[in-house]
Amino acid sequence: MTVGLVAVMWVASALVAAGALAAAWRRDLGAALAAIPLVFGGAAVAFAGVARFAAAGGPPILGQAIAVLIAAAALALVALGVGIAGREATR
Image 1 (tube, helix red, strand yellow):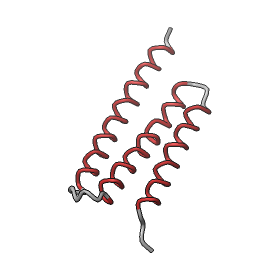
Image 2: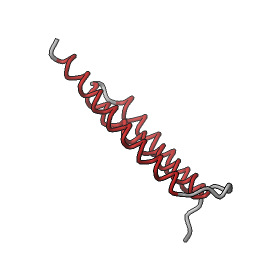
Image 3: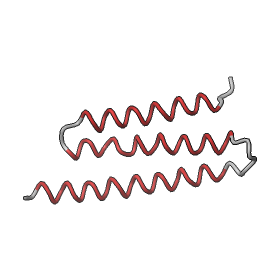
Image 4: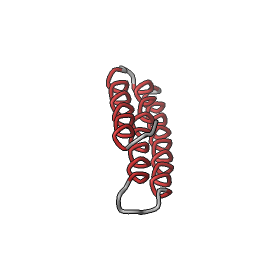
């Protein structure tokens, strides 16, 4: 069985949709922040899949590098959100 671009896009869209649903479903900010890496993970899977199956012939390592940058951005966003949520809880 081979995995194609369509399967990769389905997985990426499922991750983004699950993350968006989890973020919207939670009432408090701390629990909603837990869904942010799921959304960013879906975007990273999409970038890596498109780079892997691109017809332009570019290096597929570029998509993996962008996925790592997206993971770092998700970590920074969650850390910033937790810091903001911690400051709001003390007021």
